[in-house]
Image (cartoon, rainbow, N blue to C red):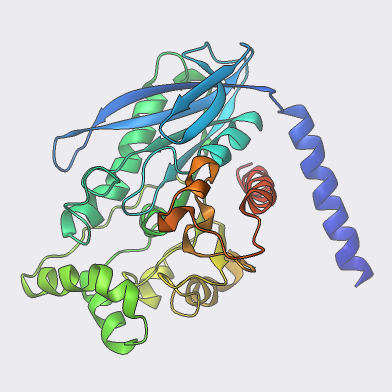
Amino acid sequence: MLRKQLILLFLLLGFCFAVEAASFSNVGYRRVEIQDSVTGERFPVSIWYPTRVQPSVFESGPYSMRVARDAAPADGEFGLIVISHGSGGGSLNHYDLAMALASGGYVVAAPTHPRDNFQDMSGIGSVDVWTGRPRQVSRVIDRLLEDTALGARIQRERIGVVGHSSGGYTALAVAGAKPSMNALVEHCKGNPEDVRFCSFGGAAAREAALRGGDIPDVRDRRVRAIVLLAPHGALFTDEALSNVVVPVRIYGAERDDLTPVQYHAERLAKVLAAKAEYVVIKGAGHFSFIASDALSNTAREAGQNAEGFDRNAMHETVNFEIVAFFNRTLN
């Protein structure tokens, strides 16, 4: 026990020194548009990064951020993290995590995935979207590495991905797990209790499987570590998951009724075994990982919290842990 405590203390001290050496009080923000290599359509990407410029309040929809818009980046070299939102979400869903990462010395980019976002959900469950999501992450990486202001500052060996829900699927796919529509069909056949998840995407999967549709290998070997938030893993067999060789941190939500932990996060943790760190957040629901802000004052499910659950406090803890995870694994 004492040895474990000393190791934990060492890791925490090491993290604190790393943050002190790469801590930035100001965060820059801008948006770009990127062309999707699957459909040819353009999609927006939000970008956060360290800067020395003083920030001001910027409001976008329900979200309010203190950022320096279109500011010059700070001097230095930074890792790159791409954040993939869940189905029906958008690029600002996890802005507080993006700002925590940028303050810790990372460039952070979050795309709004085409035809799987809050403005357009027409492609949910389709082969095109399951294929497009990870390829869009790769396009975002390409674009940031080529960026005139940020590209030269990004360390190519320090690239990670965070994904919530379907974004968790996206992160696993770019990390090397080969997706399969048939795996999703078999999951829903074998786990009829996973009703809500399978009714959400199962019908489209069955139709695609009958047509012979499947998803190509969409691995991006530049990605060196991933974080999964309330992920679903139903599109991957155990064998496919064995191809993931990068470090993984998984967060499950105790009260998740859309991707229940026993069928998704917990199963992923068991299959990935020694490669994965697994945490279950007590009292959290599926959407608890989305930044609250004005959402908490709406009637939409994404803004609801269980009685006694403090979403903001949870985010402070989880954001800190995710920065620490990438500091440990992207070195």
